[in-house]
Amino acid sequence: MSAWRWLALALVLPASLCLAAACRRARETRWQERSVAGLTLYDQGRYQEARPLALEGMRLAEESFGSADLRTAYALDFLGKVERRLGRLERARELFERAVGIAAEALGPDAPQRAHFLDNLAELLTAQGKYDEAEVLYQDSLRLMQRDFGELSVPVSAAYARLAALYVRWGVYEEAEPLVRRLEAINTRVGSSDEAADSAVAAAHCTFHLQAGELDAAWEDCTRALAKRRRLPKNHLDLAEALSAAGLMHLRSGSVEEARACSQKALAIYRERPGADPQGLVESWLTLAEVAAAEGRDAEAEELFAKLLPLYSNPYALVKALARVAGHYQSRGRLDIAERLYLQALAKQVSSPKADKRDREALLMRLAEVSVGLGRHGRAEGYLRRALETNESLHGALDPGSAAIIAALAQVQLARRRPDRAEPWLARLRRLADSRGRDSSVGRDVLRRMARLYERMGRADKAARLQAQVDAGS
Image (cartoon, rainbow, N blue to C red; front, side, top):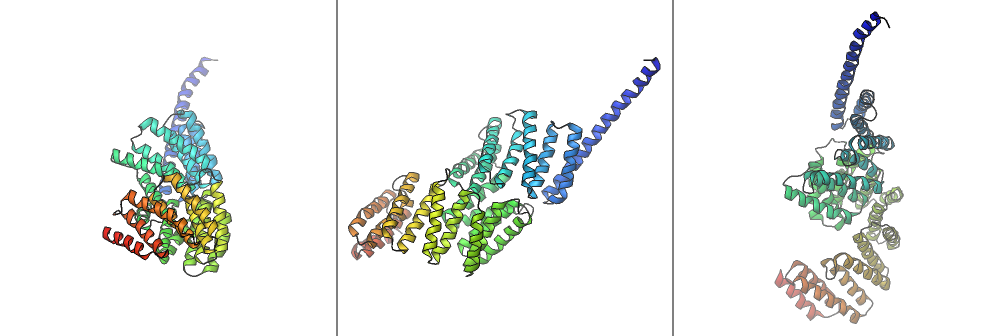
């Protein structure tokens, strides 16, 4: 090569390198600008407008940084979040999985930053009803937080909250409750908490109390969860979930108009993007069907029940839905239909590995009630014995929650005109009252049950003495 060519190359090459560097900087600046603009729209709930910016951000990241760069992972992750909110779950999953893979390669298996990508993929899998897969990811995310921050930290309590929220959504409350207790203990020790975790905890307590029929406690937690989520964009799916829970709370409390209003607002959010949360959509419809029944529109309600039950893909949620629908028919005296639905729920519950034992206990109690209504007292006794066995496996002997079951077993014996066989159950109630103290609220409740049973047996003197003990302790 001539000296002139070397000189030309020496002059041109630095200029070319500078130009290339300037182009990269310009692309990086443009990527940052598009990302910030897209995030702003996303936070406002303007997902359709955010999508073109997210798409351009992904293209710029891949062109500027390469397909293995962590910034590309963040760009893919953001586009996945947008697609998920728009209800394009399969496309979102592809993007999240690519982001998770890039992050694992770029950061290593134990980097805490990986949790961000794992959590978003887990949330998407939860929306798809793939709870087993989501559980593994949330558990890995929790492990990363524990490894990096230590157990007593806000990031760890937030990770517990996400895993607990999965279990609540899954319908396996017995898995969720110890996690909620653990994260609340951490927050107390640390003296602070994560806002999203606080919202998830309130929503979890709302669900637990509603399931247990504890309406006063449910009111406080459901209201708190809704207040926290009202700060989100008005089309946010978490807001829809809180509205749906509030609707069910109002319905159980007898406030039918409020129940309808909350459930309709939730349904409007879900219907805006029906593919984004199929289970949430079905749950809000189920509450509206129950609202219709509460307003006397039974035919409309029952038509909806028939359409909704086949849409449940989650067996744990289906158990609870079947019980709700069966409760409607039981309240209308249509006991044959109620029995069939309760039996379907029980069969599904028994065959599901993570099923809550409390669901089983409640279903057995309802089946006993239906059997009594149908005059099948022997069958009712069998259900009640199984319910008591389930209760004791959960709580041990002499648990306050067993009082209703034991009293029902005594009532069945009286209905079968076998008062001698009711006596052992009355003795058991007496031991329960003594173990808790006859002056305690539990003790007084048990004594009231005993008084009613003795009155039914025609032993008015015994019933009066027990009632006097109740009155003296009040």
